[in-house]
Length: 430
View 1 (cartoon, rainbow, N blue to C red):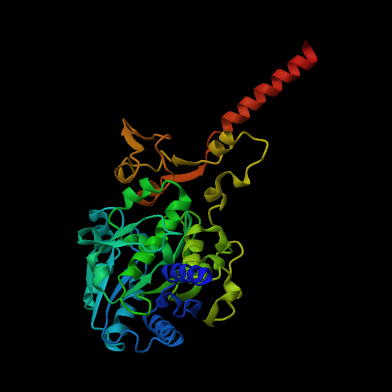
View 2: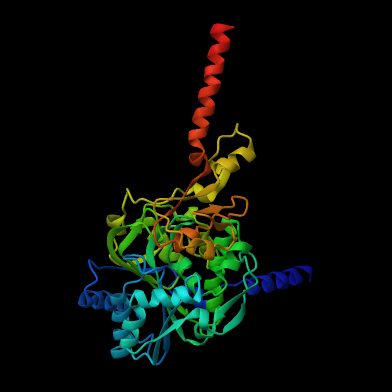
């Protein structure tokens, strides 16, 4: 009798935390298709190959679909190419039987989003193909509760009504580095559905917590899905990736691939591996993988299309050091812990020669840590939460992030030099 009661309790726990069928649907399947350029005909061929490889020929028939691109700034190689968006819209409209097509995103503010949608020509070209384009800052919001307590950072997420009402979402990130969070891909691209980004940066100052919150957005979107199949399909642009000072001022690096699948963690496992990174290092990836029972091991993925993914790994891909996320874990053990934390703290630096005092960084700092005083921008180091929003919004590449120890290195050299001279004086002259 006791055993039966314990079994019932365990069964209730298992049911409560069971993975819904939609997260098991082809979760380990990743389609990789070669694409050398953004020529419209080549794009259409690659996209059709993805639909075939993932058995999606009839998946969109009669559905409403929303495309979620990356519209961060209008600089070349920072946003999802118009050709990729319009190519998919044409396939959906003419061949896949899609009922209605939408495109939507948000950056930092309502005005900036409108500006980037216009400057990138995404709004113009998508509307010309018959898609309705949304600025999510103008959207009505719906509260979606998160039912995944062992991993979630938030209890609920407020999503645009268009995301909630649409049958399917096609997440279309660009493979890029990120100065503040090392990597930005499938999971982080969904951050562009929020309208309270600045608040989220303040709440989740801890970078592990922030990355887990990104997973909450993905789960919140799937909570609006009433079917047993996934609502979110990701098609990642890795044709021309970005290395170095991403997500805005890095340099283009050709990989020549489109990567697609239903599990956003699987896409990011592949994407970050192509950067010659270890997906286990990034909480954004491990959080979503753990929540969907996905092995964080690229050898466990079911790869279709270009199966020899190792041929595309770029050994010298320039990306931020993973230590920026791990804090003191790599520090020398003999150093006082508080000193270590200080030295390994990210330090925002402003290049005065490039700075035009436009105050974009001041206006978009979530922590209100920046201000214009006379002829320069100053930073309150005690308020700075190292999110690098300032660098993302700067239009002049005037902001960079380095470890604090490098910022004070010249002063340390002078100090050590004076100490050395003092020791020599004591030893030889006293």
